Image (cartoon, one colour):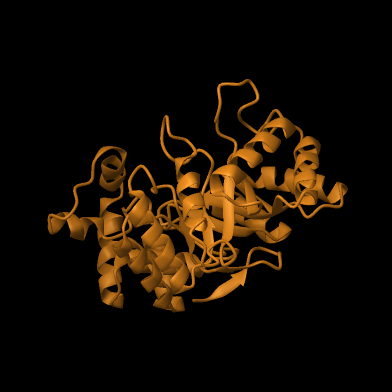
Length: 323
């Protein structure tokens, strides 16, 4: 397993981050614990979750599953860089969501209880809160750091200018600010190349791409459908129809390289600027094994150019749309 620093921080994390959103709703607790053990044994030390994970009516369920895994001992907690998130509604109280100082305090304490730990390594804002000033947010986070409940702060789904505002506010307070940003990023969805990645590079944030296979569409979906393994439905089917020729060309090129399409998609992300670790969210042990296999894939300049031709990206703003 390879390790790298999370953004400009001194924190070392694995080049893959284990996402846990499926644990509970899609993956039963015993198998989730088995996947967690296997990930840790393989060298993956970075685990991501969120207080809302668990599904409607069961929010917090995934954190509870992780908490019972940590409680088994074996230095599971000590060997893990744990990241969780807040923002979403967890109670019916007026202050039961978003990023007010009050909710940061309540949400953090509730997550710590569910996770059966006394601190979180990376506490992340799941969404921007346009109605709470950054001075209030950072004051609440500073208190949590002083209490030893969190070590680092991260964001998720932020625009480039949100990152800039957060960081400039933190600088005025002589704080560290954000060390990471989670964004949807994959060969099919490259919008963050316009402004989010440039902001991350400027301010020293590590990018943690979520949905690296775009809901499975970059994981060999056409081959799977030809083999009768999987049938795409709903929004995924509409997206596939829109990009079917690109996906077919991509799968053929992955075959030319001698790799599975999903392996190529993850390897491509690991070659992109500011990317620390794609977040993989396996439902099964086999899916985790496939993600780990991608770490062995090396793409040369010719392969990267060909992938850009199949899935054109963006130059940074404003160069992408100006002279």
